[in-house]
Length: 114
Length: 109
Image (cartoon, rainbow over all chains, first blue to last red):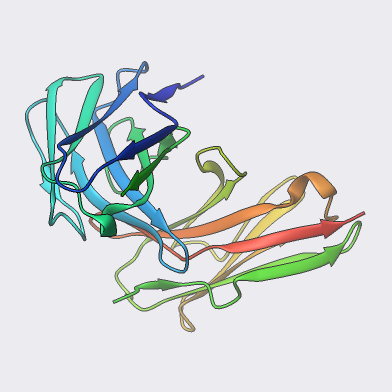
C-alpha cells in the first residue's frame, strides 16, 4: 500500500510567519503534488514535481514555493503566511506520469493563519 | 476558470437506490477521467477511472459513463450503501489533473 504522510494534521500560524508543510511518500514515486482544498473551489494545484530538484507551477503558485531535495520528500513553503492562505493542504504522489497515473493523497494539513 | 465542474454540491439518496453524480468539463483535449472519494479528515482516495476511448467503465457497484460530445461524465453507484456517504470529486487529465468542486453524497439508511 502506498503511504503518503504529512507532517501535521492541524497547524495555526500568525500572519507573516514562514510556514513549512512536509510530505513524505514511501513508494518511490516520481511525481509529487501540492493542492489546496477550499469550499466551493475543489482541489487546486499549487505546485508539482516530477523529479528531484524539479518543480512546475500549478494553477495557484503565488505566495508559495516548494522544495524537493530527496525523491520521497516534497515541502511546501509559505514565505510570509497570509490569512487568505488558511485552507486544507493536500499532498499527493504518483508513480510515473503526472497526467495519467493515479494520485495517492495524504490525510491533509488544516492550516489556519491568524 | 473552472475547467471541471460539479454543479450539485450535495445529494441525498436512500440506501439501496442508485446514486448518480455528475461532472462537466470544458476542455475537449482531456483524455483521462477519474473519480475520487473523500471522507472527512482523510485525503481523497481513487475510486474509478475511464479513458476517452471508452464510454463506460464498471467496477463492482461503481460505473462511470463518459459522453465526449456533451463533455459530461457521471458516476453511478448501485446499490448505494451508508458507507458510500462521502464527498466525491471528479478529475480530468490534460497536462495535469483538474479537479471538480466536489459533491457531498449522503446515503440514508
